[in-house]
Amino acid sequence: MTDALLEVAELTVHHGQLCAVDRVSFALEPGETYAIIGANGAGKSTLMRSIVGIHPPTSGRIVLAGEDVTAVPTVERLARGLALVPEGRRLFPSLSVEENLKVGTLRARPGPFDLQRVYELFPWMPERRKQRAARLSGGEQQAVAIGRALVANPRVLLLDELSLGLAPVVVQRIYGILPELLANSVTILLVEQDVSQAMRVAGRVHCLLEGKTTLEGRPAELERADIEAAYFGVRPGPAEPVSQ
Amino acid sequence: MTWFNAILQGILLGGFYALFACGLSLLFGVMGIINLAHGDFAVIAGYVAVVLVPSTHLPMVLGFLVVVPIFALGGYILQRTLFQSALNRGDPLTILLVTFGLSIITENSLLQAFSANGQSINIGSLIADSINPNNVISISDISLVVLIVAVVVLGTLQLVLSRTSIGRMIRAVADDREAAELVGINHRHVFGIAAAIALATVALAGLASGMITEFAPSTGTSNLLFAFEAVVIGGIGSLWGTLVGGIVLGVAQQIGAQINPAYQILAGHVVFLAVLAVRSRGLFAVREAA
Image (cartoon, rainbow over all chains, first blue to last red; front, side, top):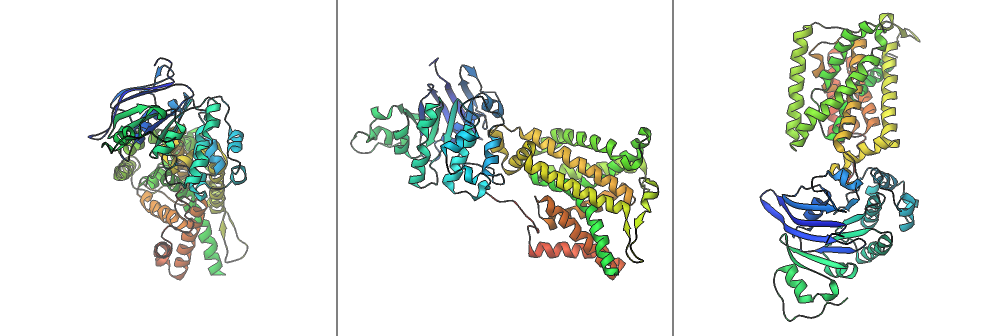
């Protein structure tokens, strides 16, 4: 646990009276892909927002590379290496593609990613760099959102619902760049409703149900019945192995 | 020719309205603040010039060198304290009430300090100088200067917003405050800078007002109304739209006055309502969602 790059310990987050995340703990090893899965309303996005500092936790700790960042402002967490690609992309619609990427460099750490590197990852982008973000398709916006986070050279990249609202072929293309990120020492924490997608790309998965941890483990070692029980809160028929 | 002159005078007046309105447009476009004290701030600028500039031995026409930096600094401080505190409450009504309160406090404080008598900024013979190509057309030098200043200010603002790093940050924060925070932009600081720019332009407008005509503690409210109309006619979020809005309003008022002097203000309001009815988001609305 001491080698963890990002450690979330006993984190509890409330939305008013509602407990959205309830004493959740996990740790990310450097260079791994870790997936948080769960149904709608399980607390996944709240957990991500809390990790980057947008939504303050009620209790618990967030430790990045051995430093407690629980009380550190969002802007400073980015400078220390935590970048979030938020649910719904959240690009700046009145800014061009290039301007969206440039604002991502404001708190950039030194590292392999810059605008040029992002353009190499997404070869369609240079031609359309002057186009307003509002005029891009959903998949293209997602690519720009990832690029905007990457140019900050994060140590941990948080990806919130990459596949939401996108066609399967676009999702495959977006997820296709993850090996490239891992090869550049980026550790990935992703939130995904699509369980099979999470199982394909993650080294470990963590299931939330109504804010509580219901399952954690390596995809190859988990039974489908256990995942479904953890995901929905009810155990279906006889267990069978998860297809990879 | 008299109608042509009316249009010309309208364009000159429109330059003044546009200068007055651009700060209002910026505050609303970036922070969503409808600053009801906008007109009163301009009146304060006039009084600051009358009180402070003589002690600097600068000619009054260069009063902006003293007043604009004071207002820019004051704008930043006002945003980081009072306005930010109101914005933090998350209710648009709070900030509206705060600016309304500021307006009342300002007007009454000025009344107490300077009385209700009108004052003007003395710019010597410049107030009477004009270009007269014939017997009908007369272009006042100071009005022409104000129009040129308005175009330069709006053009510079447009350049800053579209070409510089701080401009990108201001537009990003205006689009999505939380997403801006996620990419490392301190939105409070950016709000402060936007307010500093807005108050600097208010100071210029207040000085222009004091040079062209008289000002008194109560004149802020009527100027605020015209600034509002210019912003809405032009389209919220568009700086060039604000210039066009100011000119449309000015021309409407001058044509109304040409028909009958009593129709001057009414004609402006009628055109404002007509634009609202036909294009409710103004002539050059720019905002679009991702």
